[in-house]
Amino acid sequence: MELTLYELYQKMLREMGPTGWWPAESKAEIIIGAFMIQNTTQANAERAVANFRKHTAFDPDQIRALPLETMQEYVRPAGFFKNKSLAVANFFAWLDEFANDYDQIVQTFGAGLRKKLLSLRGVGPETADVLLIYVFDQVAFVSDKYARTLFGLLGVDGLKKYDDLARKVDMTGFTVADAQEFHGLIDEYGKKWLHPQAAFYDSFLGGDQLKL
Image (tube, rainbow, N blue to C red; front, side, top):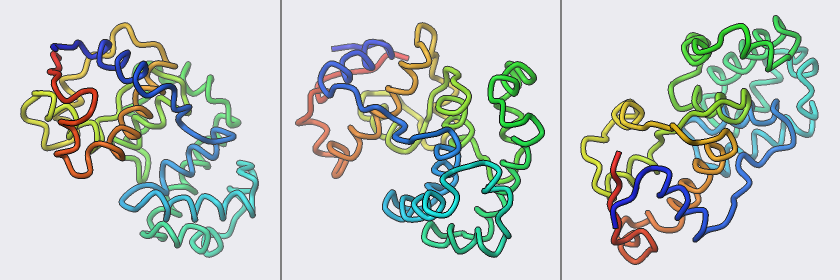
């Protein structure tokens, strides 16, 4: 069956049920998680996130007050602890310029918010899109490895790099809640049916094609 992007989302939601992504108690926790997950496993990222939970309760002022060496110890389980610590410190310093008011940031930068995020230390395309969706409540799409693998199996060609898919995706018709759920569905699907990729053909999407 040939599916549009929104039809794919609806089918995944119907078959899998809501995932509730991003699982977090605050936006500050999501920010920390978005940096910790870079180039590591979910388990390692969660260990680092747990350190911030224990020692700062994800209070932005407490995070900003951390000595860099202390933050590095919290980040260490997630790897690249020096770079990630600097990225976290820089991001929360930037938030402080807006008194942690996410709506004000959206109003200030408008359609240029993604470009601004990409200018910040340690924020690449995937992290920027995660932040847009889950922190700033904007409609965006995360063209991560699971998404590129899935869409490739659904017949979309030329998806080697992040921007290869990002340029093809049109999120017209998606709400913020849809965008948040879609990323969660794709990643949960990937964990179950894309290891190995052969499992895809036994899944509920095995006979489908995607039209972008």
